[in-house]
Length: 573
Image (cartoon, rainbow, N blue to C red):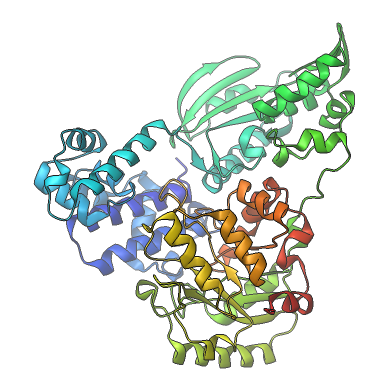
């Protein structure tokens, strides 16, 4: 049985959460969390690394003990140590820690004082108004928990794009190796590069007699076969993800790809245009009466209804059809146009690699520059650096730049925006930097007005350049804090500041609608990765995908420019 990196990381995250609820040593908790991040961010399968007898203990944050635990998970699919902890701490408590306002300490109190073991028990306690009686909780906390439970119940179960990408790429590779298979592509929201995916739709063309359906249902990650036919089968995987496979004829390939890529709203709008032209569009083609007039390619489908080809990321019925009619579709930014990364960390704070290693990693990607933006001193959990350590790092960057060829390391900082809107470091050191990235890591619960004013006060600082992960959300983990995004963007425009589109798969912050808002307002964005390892630098593709969904063109993105031009844009007026 193959075990994916994301599954191993989930086990370690679960272990960390249960240990923290249990009150275990914080260094032990942190070790599991760091190991989860390392494994999740690896560009290669841990199973493949073990098969090639690589020493996992040499990976950042992975010692011999954790390396042996990874090997156990790969070999058996489970972790004995986790099972032992789950005998003492109910596994359902992990779900509680994912609700806003309920950290491990509060979850422990809920369990010990009220006997709560899972989300259902929490909801019963909330509705009976028992939580407000506990010390340190109160009616407001109880209401926030109730609101969070209501959102949780409404939300469709969706998986982060990066996690689905690992699943999809492995499945597609497996299917392509089956005899007779010609083309394999994943459609749906995955192809539109939505930040989360509900299920997978895979399309296949193949030669007659290919055993693709048999192979599909026998894949080793399949947990249950829901249906099996000659042209369509459906399975659920161990991860809970549902996957549909459809075998389509080559003559209908483009029409099927278009139909199953969606979105539903986009498809309905285009079919309405087709009806007016006395055409019918379905998964088999474009028809005039009984005659198929298009369908072999997607471009044929669009041409048949009088539209320019619309990129999958734009197909949300948000104006792309009108733009296609008027020949005003954006030329979407591409990964190859990114010249550098403006947000990256080293092992000086909570990163895993050295200054030189990060620079060399960026150079391998063809970048012209990389900004090193380690955390400032207020973020103690990340070993944030003070002014003395920052000045020492600036000297190290000067020495490294004198030795490197083909890439320039930029001097930067991810400086904390404090509760009152001031910055965590003095102007005397900030003015020595090439780029200052401001970020919120505390006081998430401020009101919309106070949070907005806090950010704008930070932008008033003449050395502030880019607002990092502007809403603070973590996908499927933490809601965005309340801010007036339009006010923040207008303030950035007025002050010569910019916002970041953080490409880390857990963040993708800004979302696609906010990217479109920035573009329409004329505010340029930086697409950055917030990399904590060299492999994290490759997350740039997720940021670019999100930017494309937000209609971003190369001129809308700061780091499509060479350093000489970018330097002028960063200079505050």
